[in-house]
Amino acid sequence: MDTVKPAKNRITATFADPELEKAYQGYSRMFFADKDRLMLYAAVAIYGLFVFLDFFVLQNARTEIISIRLLMMVGAIGIIWMTRLEIGKKYFQEIACFLMTMAGVSIAFMIWLEGSVSPPYYVGLVMTAMIMTNLVRIYFMLSIGALSLIYLSFALAVAPMGWTNYVYAAHFFTASSFVLIIISSYIMEIGRRDEYIQYRENQNFAGQLQDMYDDAKRSIKRKNAVLNTLTHIFKTPLHQIIGYAQILEQESLGPHEATEYKEFSSNIHAAGQGLLRTVQRILTYSRLDSGSIKLSRQSTTTAELIDCALSRLVDDIETKKLELEKPERHFRIKVDGALMEQAVYELLANAVEASPEKGTIRISTEETDETVSLVITDQGTGIDLGKLDEIENTLERTEEFLGVSDKISLGITLTSKIVQIHTGKLSFVHAGDGGTVARLTLNRQENEAAFKEPAGATGTDRQDAALKQAS
Image (cartoon, rainbow, N blue to C red):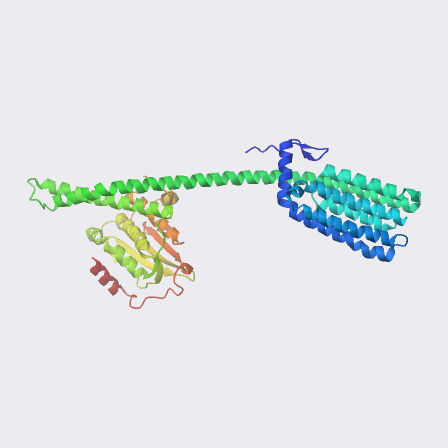
């Protein structure tokens, strides 16, 4: 983005580029017209308050001056109201400048009628100029013209009074005040244009961010569409491969002449099942990422989630002769049961995959005042914690996993997404014996208020029975 500030005319306090100046004037009308209009009404009210001073102080032309003041107030209110119309909005600055000039000249005329330079009146002149020029966004050159005309009318009004000390004092006070008002008006006008440039830069930056966000969103939608299409394309032939491999493995059409065929078909069947699970993971992840899956929270327990997940891993656990240490205490939670069970399964499957034969997997539950956690600890070789952010946010295989299967990467990615949409947290640390500790944490406010321990679910007997039944 171009950081060069647009040039300004230092004499007129306007942008050197006419198009930019026009854009600034449109911006000023759009964002500040209501405030400026309110300030104009306030100035008219202050102008009207002088009626009381007129009534008690004036000696020579009280009736004429009060009549002029009231007439000017009515006219000014009508003119200000016109700034709500389209033509009034277009020439708002000019109208404000005209009102300032009209108010100043009327006060000078009152001084001439009274034939006195009584301080309240030229002080009122200065107040009018200050309010109109510094608090309403009147362009610098317009305000100079208006102030010059007001001062000229004041000079003509006091000319018949001669050059007395009071007239000298009135000239000095009014002239010096107008000079200060002009200087402050110039500084404010320059500052307002710098403010506008900053506004334009912020708008451009916001536009760029919005474009980047829209591009990212479109990219995610395209990616999810591709993933959904590919996974649907893969699933049909995979089911066929798995089905035919199972027929061959079970020798449903007759025994094989060569015993190796049964082994080969068994390998095809296992590979197909593994690939199908991978495809299903990707499909679930893409649907979660695109928001097409909505959470259906229902009451369940940590025991039910653990038992259901373990029931899918019985064969792997028995093959490795792993020992399970299950939690004695469970909690009732309110989650999407199918998704959260998938998350627990992925963590347990990772632990089983990483564990050595006859190793131990410890499952525990913990609670605090704000959270409840499920903790799974294995005795495997551990994972590279420095790669976790990459793993949790991409579907790419991470080769740097320390001897662990690449399907663990996809499992962590899917689990992280499931926990994220439950507004929970997934974290990993190294265990003391070299394994990995996976912690799935849920917020209490997103679940049932009490998190009470389910009746009859405090021991391991019921877990073992449920696992045995599910198996």
